[in-house]
Image (cartoon, rainbow, N blue to C red):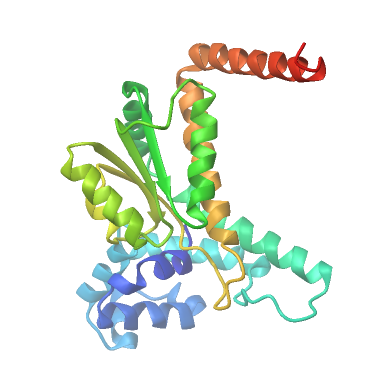
Length: 272
């Protein structure tokens, strides 16, 4: 995940000193590549320990890993845009390019930061459960429907409260947070999907699977980038599950396809 993406995701959790360091890094990225931890500390008016701590807060192992990622970001920065606004009377070409660039960056950052251990845990939880309850509100309801449709094809009903999966991009949707809290109080296992970082929803999670910080504009006309990243995350989990339990998944999807085909044939025959 890019340094900028990590910063956007964790900014609210950083101290003022840590923000000062990262702001300097973002404003002088090229120069920082040649700086030692002591050089950066001096330039930012802080200490080497604060620089190392800021790097770890951005989810890098240390300052050197941050610089390596920064170099990679600069190398591939030619197609990135800081302007997420859709302007009045924009041309179709401009809209297509903006959405493609934004989607590419959001998806890449989401994929880059996925924790394989968390994926394994979620796959195991789903496989061991008899029922799957999925809950999301607003735009996240579409992600919940996506999960229900996918695992429903594999024979997992989504109407009972055996394993609970809560989705909220912000992690602060009151309905979702309350539902997760009640699920934990009832002793149920909880999966949560939110944007990267700590929030109210992650407090109730047995396991979290998170997306990058979506690059939404100030005037958000639709939850475009957050849905892109949520759907990508769901697809990765689903196909990882199918790959692990391939034979059973194939049987279930074949049966599902056969049932749909029979139903359509029934309709074509006019209920005869």
